[in-house]
Image (cartoon, rainbow, N blue to C red; front, side, top):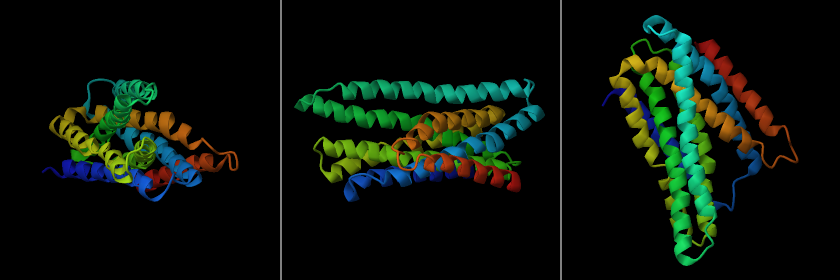
Length: 267
């Protein structure tokens, strides 16, 4: 197996493991600590925003300037918009599935349908996230892969992994409230993330077999990363902060600063 495809597989197996860890909260806790979770999500958002430029967009522009006949700014813009729109489209599907689940009224057959829709909605959402991680690692196929490239791929995997923790809990805890056992709730919660390794391998293979799309793939991953950070991580980390309203915000700033420092220092 190609080394970058293997790395994509390992990375997405790790993001799946974080989903399972989040789902495991149903076994040990009623719910994870909001303060710690908000801080983690804020830090991840800051890291992802910084990495989207220094680790992904900047290398994409440099590669496009060196190899593409299309102006680099067009390549980067197209890839960035496609990445964001791809995840936006998947989120629309997820939102539709969730609305259907929430509109169920709790009769036995409808309760089963609600459980299925809840698991399916998160599972569908995880497919493009796995693709984004796979694409990021696939860009490392080139022999000129830099430290920035490695940092970008690892960062997007870490960011998506961190936001998978509450997603795992978001499946298992409601299922427990629906009356499923803790074991079954955990099983379905972790199963919602199993598609990520599959999608990750597919994304990496696509980039490896078509090296000319590398600049597009890098900016695609950046667009996906920004959408995840702005649409999911930041709003989520700002909830339930009455006692310490700046805790998650400072997490965002700290994450951005740390990633900027690492990218510039190691790049």
